[in-house]
Length: 467
Image 1 (cartoon, rainbow, N blue to C red):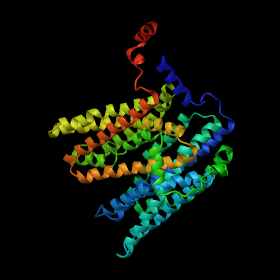
Image 2: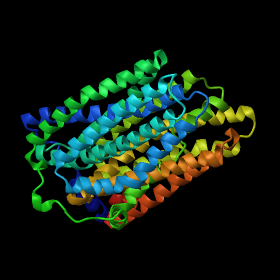
Image 3: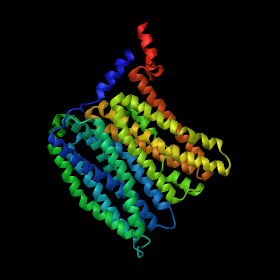
């Protein structure tokens, strides 16, 4: 009986008031919020993927420039994201979000100008490295501004708007994540199609698109701010103390939400996704064609989008803690067979079967990944003090970037296709550690991992109560 009561309280705490009818103004506010979030995410995805294509076209004989570009961009997130979150927490919400929009768009415009210069055949040998360095620095600014925008909107504004308009946080979070995944699917496809026709045209389109849509995004988010008075921070709630680079990290690891956040971050240490590493492996070490791999990637993203529909329903029924446990276990189970196949299969035919098993397992596991992500996002939204939400979330982003860098390092240490099994094992080990971290948090919060009476069946529970 006690375990049932704990579960009921847990559900009541996080269900929100989704049954309430939102005010008429809520549709207009949400529409503007979604437009702003879509433009921010779409432009970020468009530029992120487009820059790789542009560099590949400019420097055709080497991968050095693209590698340095990606590495420095990720390092900037590791070094500065956490301290940037503290600035967001201390700033006026509208001013902070508007600055993030401007500092996302202007560096993209400047980077595209750099790419156009580098694309010129007449570029001098001494000018090209300087222009490339400038493009890298602009990309770092864009990365940090995009992180600040994402943290502010998804981890702070979403909570205030949800409470003010009596909207379910689960549904709001899921819709915004659905927008992210939609942009993840279509933005790279759009820029790659244009680049296949003309790299110069693709650069100009990215440049003009970012310059023109910044005004729409800028105005839309301002209208959201004016429509929700609760977004205005009172002067006495804004911190003014100066913090060192290490302060956000100390606050992060001292937070009661560090275990679920750390568990989510560990999932970024992986090659078990349709990212560059696994895609390269499938193209070079299996019989799959590029069209087949692209189709598989689309299928995996569709599973991810399905996860954004399943997660809110499950969280309403059992709460975010238990749903997080279920989703993480789903991901763990889906990847067990692919990982085992790399250890068992040796010859060429068996390796082909292992690759097929890998594709199916990774695709199915994405439902668990994003369901777990949404569950943890809700827990962090509810569990972190409003004055430190951005600082905590931006530190989490920095930690995720660290694990991403480690995943890149794995392929440097194990560069050959026949060694791909070792990064696979390490990736599965990271999921195992994530499961341990989250299970520790669940046990601490609820006193148990499973409802034994529910696991053993209703009849057993009734007989137990009868005694």
